[in-house]
Image 1 (tube, rainbow, N blue to C red):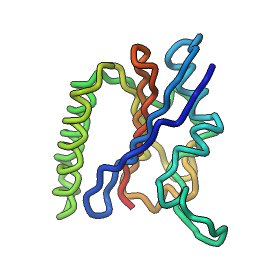
Image 2 (cartoon, rainbow, N blue to C red; image 1 turned 30 degrees about the vertical axis):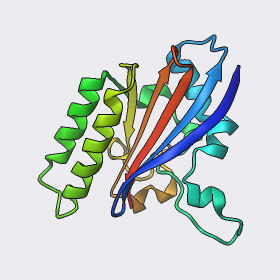
Image 3 (cartoon, one colour; image 1 turned 120 degrees about the horizontal axis):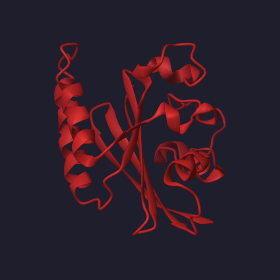
Length: 172
């Protein structure tokens, strides 16, 4: 199996952001779910699946937040599967929570931009995990998870285009 980092982009509004990473893949011989979990445990994702500012930092004294999840403990059973419509609906419902303050506006802005980009995706099978599905102290959460208001990891594989997409959507 060959994997190459194709690039990343950000969808940002204030302190809320989606980091979207895309990789090309060749020679997948596993089930989609097995491949995705193997991939997030791989050095490819560990090395390239980081915000640009973290990659560009040359100083070992710089302290950046880690992601909310302990990637070594993630399993596909921690994720929920959605089709495109279901994924969009999940985020619409999330945005309607009565717990939002003024920062709801930024979430909705990102959600709309993300939704428009998802419409262009040919795949209709997405995997989502939210830090809110776990309690502090769970093996799945990394210590920095407490600094995030919300944190989602979204993954999908496009076999036709031979790409894998990983999005980290968070608010810190």
